[in-house]
Length: 352
Image (cartoon, rainbow, N blue to C red; front, side, top):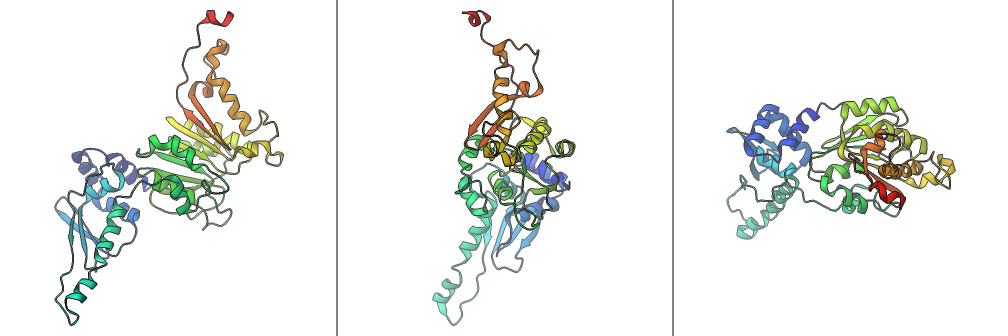
């Protein structure tokens, strides 16, 4: 589980919305060079020179031989990428070449400068990305969470909106691409763009070469409860866990029991493709019996209301105490982690 980059990213994402003094202190502690490396990984390649300033020093990056120079404070670049401040750049300066007129005259001079604004704007847009709809992001990156196979992103938008700007940790089981190590990762890239301060983890039984800003992958078996518990202890706690793995009912149940304890209070555990609960070839049953994924989720509904039967089992099980809500949509369910401690209705009403 190679998470060395998280030692830079995790505190950086936390500090991005803090006051300037704390952000500057964090940048010094992480070393500006390490922070700049993450900034460049996030924004990708561009046809301009980017000068980043910090503590009186300026370093040049991207196309250092380009004529157009964009200058920013490193702290402002971090705020643009990971913060929530919509104000214009306070430290932005743009320098463009100013060559002498040649034989083409003024018309040629103006023509040669037409692409400068576009190049600068492309860089600034990468440094302060626009928040886009999950459906758009799914289409852009090729995720099947929005398309003629599934229509999930509308439900994800509803449940994830409150977490979008938070420094969340996300774990998705199932990276996609089957056995091809160079295929898959569409949803991981979608989550990376959606959660602008999120650390995105992907788990798959096959080896995967998916890379990207704030993305890491782990190879492992979702039916191995011991492995999942170790993963949760090393990489968690998670704000979001999404099971889009094998969809075999036994695997879904094993994964839930192993990973739900590693979901942070206020977080969500999502189970996709619940249609397999009804398919015998996947370990399901037409009536979604208790042994199926849907049967497991249905049992949580009674657990939510255990206080209404006098709670003869004392304090209840771990899941009964720590599941505070469940939402079902077509083939997908969201389980909310939280304290379930509400008292039941008055005792005298039960005998009326």
